Length: 407
Length: 133
Ligand SMILES: Cc1ncc(COP(=O)(O)O)c(C=O)c1O
Image (cartoon, rainbow over all chains, first blue to last red; front, side):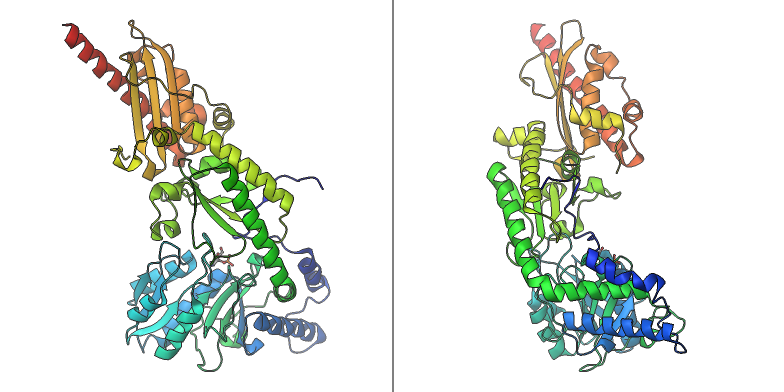
């Protein structure tokens, strides 16, 4: 097999649609194209049957009791908004305090910020240097005003898997609802709303080899029955939780992706983990001063987030332009601030600027891994040869003792 | 982000990478930026008795545009007198490299690096003149 460029290694950002998923979706565009809400003819019934089957498959993937607990949405951004705003609006009379973490996706953080403007108070708990939140800190933060705790399953930048089972024990005992943005972890690390006592969970299809623009919110129906205030008014679809004609082909693709995860996930994760370890070893064999960001074991199998000291992340991405990865460097964002996730783990800003996220997925090969390891090592060494910081470091200068002229 | 051809060209073939002896009385060194901000440039000049920059070297920690800006700066100042070099504006660098607005700070840093190297050199030469009396 010959290596094809460019290589896609940014699977936390999105994943390609699996050809088997696409195949399952196609008939639902042109043949079984009915509106799942049409009750008067077979076109509608067939579409509805496909949607109901999809709910059951997705429910099975996350350990839900029933497909009735799945509310389809346009993706996880919508699911996060619906979960947090929907709970806040419904239970706001009971209390106005929400707890989350500093490493959540913006869909959670910015939703919480908006609620703060509406009179809610939000506690943003920090994580340890390993990127993991301490369940005891959550327990300590809960007050009689707390209505919701929102903690992601796994982080999208540095892959750290959060202790949801321990958190769920606490929230259940205290009678507080638990929401999890489970986007990055679904199919990749064990997740069960049942054993983890999760009450609401956001999922999106495009991070698991399904199509973009479709996702769901799991909403627990018993013990406790979770109620939401809908955020979209209209025809009252999805048991009133989310109005709008369902994206039937998308939902069918989402379910097919879920079915593939159920069937093949375990073997796939073992293979991807081996690839990640191979990439890590390959880079370390030829490059020194490389820091692994996030917990070494409690992390997503496909996630390798490394800081290459003395090299700026964007310049490294430019050097490996045939490999699609991402960086926590400020230069990749308009804000000139390096990754808030890495900084909230206490990583020095310089190292945050030097970070690269490799996201290995279903379609990456060993050959690609070896190519990337070799390329990254050689480019890091080349960029270090033009880095004043590396030269100063080699001359024994402590970079923290230098008086930098900040600009 | 798409880079201009000139940025890519300088990034791939940076001119005048290297280090001059900072203790040489004819060498001026400018070190600007901060690691925490994501870019640091070190620009050095070697100046003849006639005040002409004979050699310029740089090393840069920063994005591709920062590397290209400093590479271009060394190219432009070589052969100029220190006073001529001091008139180079960041806007000229930004224009030559077609830097987008978010990268203008890279050209600002390059201008600062030139000025800082010249200031260091002038200070050294003044100190030497004072010693010679
Ligand atoms: C953790 C996390 N939450 C939410 C989202 C948003 O998902 P979507 O693109 O489906 O809106 C993403 C992906 O960008 C994510 O990584």
